Length: 190
Image (cartoon, rainbow, N blue to C red; front, side):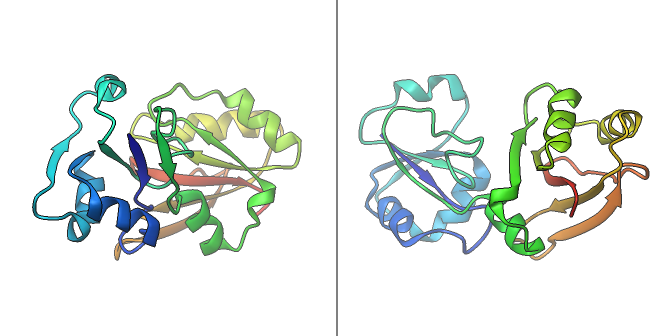
């Protein structure tokens, strides 16, 4: 199996990833991932939308599995097989805000429970926290917790990175931002 990072948005596919997709006979991916690479899929290829992520481990060896962003940043890199990296939302977000990736600690709360203390711990260490969020992420409560811990920080919400409707909204923990479903969020000394 080959796990291919398709990038965080349109036109962020690497040449290596495009080649693997073009040569594939069987591709699995989310609807969004398939849409991002549709022009590279050959006409004889069987394409399937992933219905059950638990069954991905059972795919045949010749399957290509598409992972949005980079498979090793909250993606499908845990699967057995070769990984072709992609341009991650972390890379794009750091580039947009001119933040060194060396200052950033990524934490995903996408499909996971939010641990405010883990975020506070990293902020106390002087790190900039990069959060991958989803619809269940409660930014109001997180920011309230950080404020109660004396952590008065800047917050930047990046939405739809790489798409024409891309947005970058700035706020603070004292005046928390609204964070639409699939967003990336920086918290720290920005």
